Amino acid sequence: MSFLIDSSIMITSQILFFGFGWLFFMRQLFKDYEVRQYVVQVIFSVTFAFSCTMFELIIFEILGVLNSSSRYFHWKLNLCVILLILVFLVPFYIGYFIVSNIRLLHKQRLLFSCLLWLTFMYFFWKLGDPFPILSPKHGILSIEQLISRVGVIGVTLMALLSGFGAVNCPYTYMSYFLRNVTDVDILALERRLLQTMDMIISKKKRMAMTRRTMFQKGEVHNKPSGFWGMIKSITTSAPGSENLNLIQQEVDALEELSRQLFLETADLHATKERIEYSKTFKGKYFNFLGYFFSIYCVWKIFMATINIVFDRVGKTDPVTRGIEITVNYLGIQFDVKFWSQHISFILVGIIIVTSIRGLLITLTKFFYAISSSKSSNVIVLLLAQIMGMYFVSSVLLIRMSMPLEYRTIVTQVLGELQFSFYHRWFDVIFLVSALSSILFLYLAHKQAPEKHMTP
Image (cartoon, rainbow, N blue to C red; front, side, top):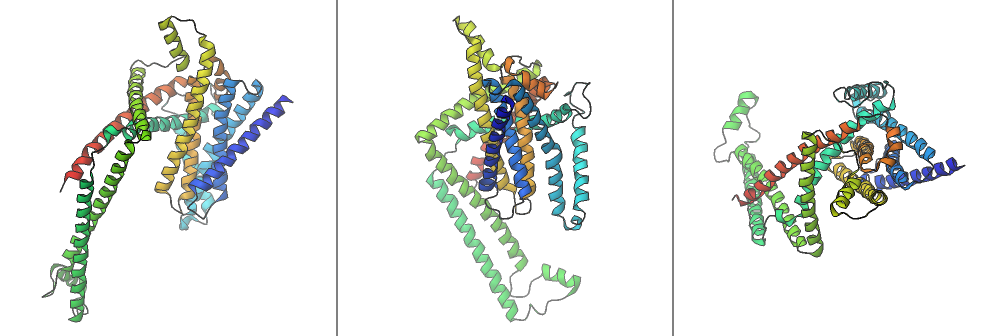
């Protein structure tokens, strides 16, 4: 009876997660597109539902909600379904919609979709060869084979996003990195833009007048034909007329300059608004967060370097370890086990909420940046694939933030994976991503003032 009650709780929560994924799909991703494929919408919502269910089961592990056997069953069921979606269902439909957009392959789209899926499976399987992610006793059809490869892709993605976010967050929030933009700078750039537009209009008027003059003189109808006639018309101009090709080149150059000036003007306006915003109470609060994240970024880079150099992976969750160090240093009486459980629960909850929120915001921005009415279905399926792999990998890494007594079922469900490898791999990719982001933002910040100073 308890198993039925536990299952009804899990099914109800999955229906709620599915509904939220459906609303997010309708209200955010596809709100500007009328053509919708319901199979894409269902796949995205199901992937989101089972991804969130994994996080829900982690919280249930810490709180002790549901029977232990029920949690184990739903862990296994949830993991099997999400792996089937990520490895078999989503890749096949991505190939299907890609082939459907190619007219030449439309009649044989099912065959070519299967060929694309087999190609994906080949590279997906070969992905595990260079990495020490499995125990030798695992068979080719074991669940560890799938989750280990999904984990490599997901952890790489997480590390790349985390490295860039750890650097970009303080750069975005801190007023220290804002350029000093005044109204005089904006007016000067807008004046240059207006002058450029006037020159474009003037030259286009000259071109129109020249064409009218040539038409009146009958020069348009008496153009020499053939290859040599074309060469002659390019290199020479009729007496009393302008060289239209030369003027057109000048117009093209001025139009490109006007586009650059417009983008720079918009950038200056945005910077000016950020300067005004930084003076408000909310802006000062985010500025403080920027300094906090700067310290966190430096600490994270330092710890990642230490872990890589000394080949170190923590055996105790960070909360318990931090409390033990503090208690031993201060020499006070403190129930480390009791409070570490509660603080770990809060920390894991914050990680889960921020991970879901941050990923959804990133997916929305990415979708708007590259989507179109023809490619939107493929892009949504790619986002579903990324989302599922991201969440599966989050479970692999969050496991280390859980106290030892709560890791038992999670470890049993995930199998005998080389968990230490994933943490070392995360540190390596995080360090590369963070250092690359620092270099990129430094060069961008350095070139921005020079660009605006050029006359």
